[in-house]
Image 1 (cartoon, rainbow, N blue to C red):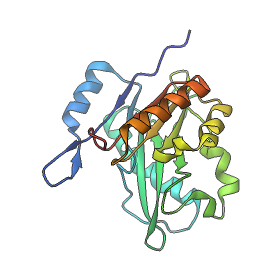
Image 2: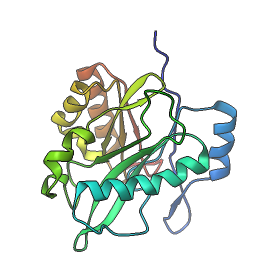
Image 3: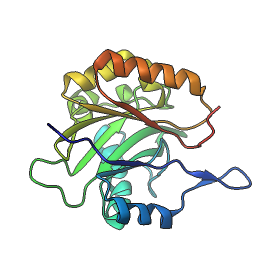
Image 4: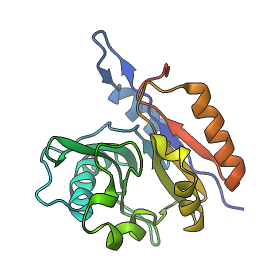
Length: 211
C-alpha cells in the first residue's frame, strides 16, 4: 500500500496594516521535527523580480520556477507555491503555480509549472504557445510514490480542470487559494470534487480567516 504525502500547508499570519507574512523559523522547526515531503504556499504568495521578456507560457514557466527554486533550495524540502507574474500583457498579470525539488529521487519530478485557467487577469489560452505547452501543465508532479495535481482558487469550480488532472494520473489535488472567499462554498466544492474523483482534495489560503 502506498503511504500518504506528508505536507506542510502554510497559512500566513496577518500583521497590523493587513500585510501577510509567515514565520520562517517555525516552518524550519516543523520541517526539522516532522520531515514533510512537501511545503505548500497559497496563491500569489511569490512573485519574480523580473517581468516576462516574451509573451509565452514557456517564459512564464522559467520565471515562476526560478522564483520558487530559491525557497526549495533554502528550506531543503520540495516546495509548491502560488506565483503572481505581473506585466504579462501590459499592466495585466497571471496567477500561476510552481514546484521545485532540489534533490529528486529517480522517477520524481524536479520542477513543474501550472497556469490558472479561470479568473486571472491573463489566461494561458491567450498565449501563442498554449497548445504546445498544455500537456506539460497537466503532467502530475511525482513525489514520494504519489502523483500530484495543482489548481488555483476558482479552478476548482470548473470540473474539466480536475477531470483533466485525474485523467492524467493525479492521485492528490492541491488547490492554492488567495483570500476573501466564501469558506462554506469552498468546503462544499472541495468535498464534491473529492467524492467525484475519489481523490484527496486539499486547499491552503492566504489568510486563516477566509470570508
